[in-house]
Length: 149
Image (cartoon, rainbow, N blue to C red; front, top):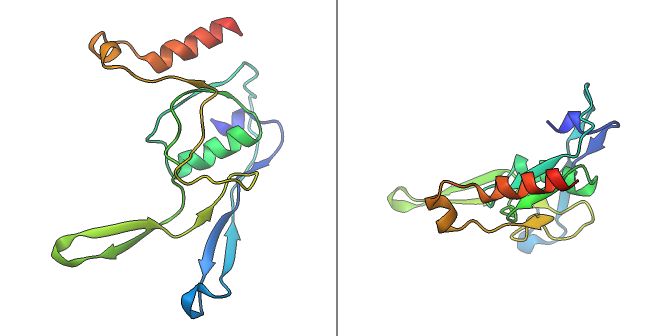
């Protein structure tokens, strides 16, 4: 979807992979990488509205970072999870595993991504009442905005 929202190439924020070779995390350096996204045709010329949910992680956070930084869409819903980066796993006794990210990922402006995520332009909290009634409050808000703009 993202390539159809842009007229010029865009880039994700940098993913910083720590290269630790000294004890006590002294003199840590980072290998950096990111994604470049090229535009595709046909260009979507209407107002784009994206629904965010707390389960947006990883590549979804990367896409939201691009959407947020380049102002490509209006967002509706709840904050994203604030979790991006590759997964490192530690195998623990009794079959347990611990997972954590192996990257330092910041927003395009250098601010914190982890735990904070991306806040929607139009916050919506799902309610049990709406679920009982078979209503999608995220979609209702998105449609309300689309009709207004």
